[in-house]
Length: 214
Image 1 (cartoon, rainbow, N blue to C red):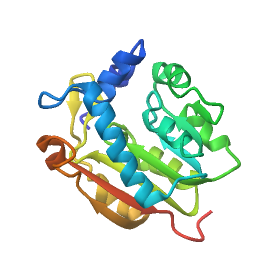
Image 2: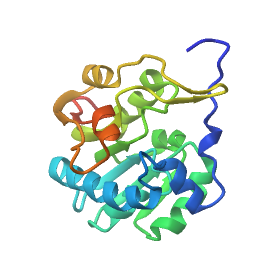
Image 3: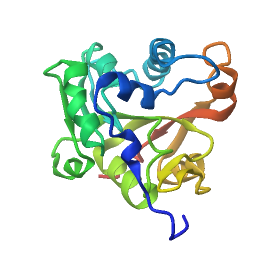
């Protein structure tokens, strides 16, 4: 990224749940946030259920926002730790999830956890992160058990919040994740389930921590 462009994630600092929802899932092609929230949450959880089998597991929700998917995981008998860099999102998440089986913290505190996670999700998250290779992937590798699976859903292009708006810095997330983890199933979202723009411009994938790596 150009040295003159500063990373600026304040767009995610929303004061209440409705406005947080609207920035997490923005209206697309005439489809409002509330419809996306209902339909895409169900569809994303179908993919997570199929590829992670999360029921009863200890799961990391990396970039949890207000806990949209953490709530679904808790309802599947999971214990969930959500991490997010936004103070506002972390403040809103407990009220949204409303479960003693959910804990939210800054990513910094992952380094303090003794217990490793069975699985992790990063949905609409890594596309926005500034220092993916040196920070986020290191944390995700450290947090997972050997053989633990990571489910990722992102835009094809990077969408980094900066002082001049959203920027694509050219980082190929799929290729980068493939170097850090064992690559598993991958695909695009179905145009029967999401808008044509989302189906064309997004991807999902499953990545597994190498066995034997602590």
